[in-house]
Length: 511
View 1 (cartoon, one colour):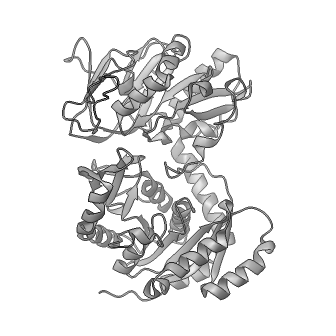
View 2: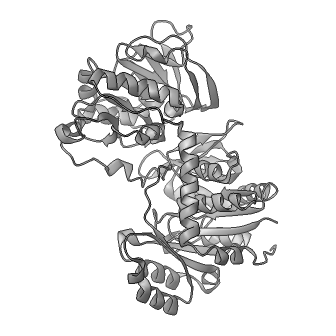
């Protein structure tokens, strides 16, 4: 059997995902075959594997750190929220339907065989499995039939590292309170504590660590410093959304910077499509939720969404649609996936796959909505989800981004919808549809190729009379490789890896 270790947290955003990625990279560097595992992930950022199956991007990121291809067995259950109380449930990469929170709470124990099959399949492939928990193991209302925290640790006999976030404050209460709420058999699994995201002089923590170890009777095996890394984070907890949120439009970015504005609608998904631009000095990527924050950017980006009709309605009611349409006369607009669908003339959902209700106040049918009418396309939402990796060379493209013509692209499609031209449904739609300053594509990861990102930035910089240093522009894949090594170096310095390897040597047994 593969050796296992599990990382759990005192709360969401304690840093579990990055610590799992860092451990995966360290084990890889030390010559082991290693893989990540998370039995259940709730996320709107997802990925399509080579065999056309869907999984959470956090486990994709961790697989990259481990140096192996992402496999759906690393994340057998993915929940994609469709509204405040329900989610699309994806098991082994396939959609099985939409469920409300209470319905899924009762149903989830039926998925234990799927979880164990995925885990045992992974065991056949690697030497070490690093498991990630979700939220906190001390959520008393969720502990019944738990399949992702201590319930998962029990299923595979995993030792546990418990992580607390000192950046939010109260880390000693987080860690000690969590330990106190665990059952004796659960507490016995916790072999080490990690204080994460520390800023300052570590010697100031000495007395607190001593008391924590005395009261909790679990050793502190690391105090991890706060590090800003260009690595994908959990979509619901990302700090990217807040980076420039509160600045006035006329001062949102320096005059010498390119201003890329991403529309952040309520059900935004796969915003990782724009991370590649963050590496370039002189480029600002900001997420806007109000018209007053939009200003006059150099490029407007419409990301994916888990609910195209619902978010299109939000665009209209918030005034964002009109603001984007007004700017589109002079500012380029680029939509991906759901954002691409919104740019068309009409979106229909005859089978109500997105679970939208009739808007009685405006007397609108929840199964259809007028789009922004900036691209000559229309979309019909279907129950069948398109899931595939794609690559090739772009055909001739007109307009401001004409230099994209012939460039190599690579990425993946993941959408529930068929898109056609308005006037000719028989005519094949190209990879990128263009009309004036407006562009759209279904391809996630479209900008990750350095040559495509470089064309976009060069064009925008030339329009503004700015000079950008793009000689060192790397593909997003290469950026992340360097960041995983930085993460591993930091963890080796501040985490007691001898203690971690000692936990791995503990004998596992079969129930």
